[in-house]
Amino acid sequence: MYGNSPFGSDGMDAESLSPDQRRRIERDLSRVADQTREYLPGEFVVGSELSAGADGPQATVAVRPPVGSVVSAGYSPDDPERSISDDERDDIARGLAASAALQVKQALADHDSPTAR
Image: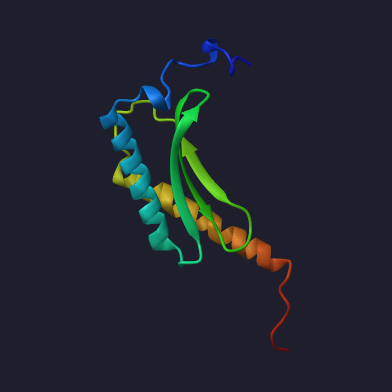
């Protein structure tokens, strides 16, 4: 409701992060993206982005499978001083990889034809 006004934000946006906070969040995003790449073949494109969201900085990691829809995971860091833990990073990466693989499976299910009978 207040997304376009100053009432809808806590006052922290991606531009107001200190250089150290920005580097920490970008490093975490890079680690999640790297971990996700380890679970997927090279045909899957994995990227990350830090942008200004309606409620502050928005961190996003996305996977574009060779077929099917893009899959992404995003979060708004409540505490830009806190890094993503190894367990959280692994959970996010596994979830993204599994979702991307499912997108491929669903996209190909409509076009599968039996190879032998």
